[in-house]
Image (cartoon, rainbow over all chains, first blue to last red):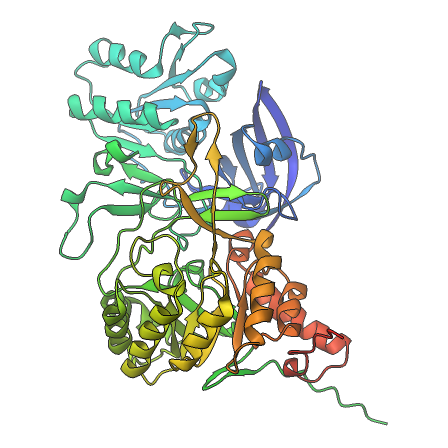
Length: 272
Length: 310
């Protein structure tokens, strides 16, 4: 599918937001789904790269993705300019089950994990219910904290933690979550949603289990085909949840097709 | 004067197996076909080979299973598959509606298991043949253990030959010193065709973690980087056996496919290219047709084995 670049803005050092004109994808996009982009017409990098959809507008026919430059593929993406044509596949993935707009949400994001969570929050708020949204954002330092304005515009309560203390609370976002769970969020009713580095997700899942909170995660991972055929992107899920007569142990699910959104309680975090 | 322009012929025959065109989607890159069905018109493919099937379902290898290399991809999936029975119950019925030839890649722990899987698939409605995987480099037993030994290859293929009357293709391992010996053994054992070749053993290292990029340390390399290597093996095999050879390795374009066909391949398999572009196979078919039209060649078979070496 063809799309074209409308703009490609640097949000902070190494982080970018890219707006793509692609009415077909904008029409089908849902929160928690992603695109793959063929970065090079030739073979370096070889594979398409996945980008989570941050926001989409079916009326205007646009889709936004947020990404960090971490390697050759994303570096080339950061050099795309207005009018450049893009080779796109999407929307891919299962996406979030949209909660009722009265259910409170606590979002825990690390770095570009913010993308999936913003798409969800934007959709929920559009439903104009009474849901309270709290967004906890974390990273190594201030440049990793992106898109705060967008969340505040949605009416979310935004809390920040950085490892180096350059913005918000010093420490990890999971430390921040822990203190919130003892403080402002204590004995509150909400669902946890999280997206970001694996170590962060593992800890969020552990806290959710400890506090008996429902927890939904969106996973990122290296992908081959991106459409569920090659089995390169799998994660392990807990065998107890499967009919082991029918499935061999260990049991794997594809992030690109069975996910990227999963119930945190299903995932075998020891293998992640 | 009327000039009647007939469409060039793309039909090819791999012994008893007739294909509408010489382009086959390779095993492991196309799932069970259905994953691509709403993006790609499967009817247009010459054939597709489903993911390797074993007697019992297999979970596959731990992560990491993929590592990108320069113009290449290392994989160590480990033959994760739903097992031959689930394939027959859940996948083949829907697949059999398509006009392309459906081929089942098969694997076993030992030659008895290969024969068992072949027997279970024998005569299945909608199945056009089997491709015997004696070449997977990512499993501890079976796979390349057989394909690196002429006698073991013979044993496995002979067992499969006895177990089924369907066309039998044998997918050879490139990780051998002399592929001609393995190819001849497969031919003697009754193979109808050979696919050359499976992935090349390779590895990659994460220098920050000082760890291999794949969980199994080594894996199979595919993609454009391997084309010169696989092409040489195809040419050698073509000149060593009398049965048709399917060329596979790094094909992303019709030009690549033509190199294999000129070297003597009856057909080609396309794998990693499907990840770059799900329409890769279709594009190659269209571009092959354009090539024949442009050069006024009536039949793709006229291009085959036309390499000039003197």
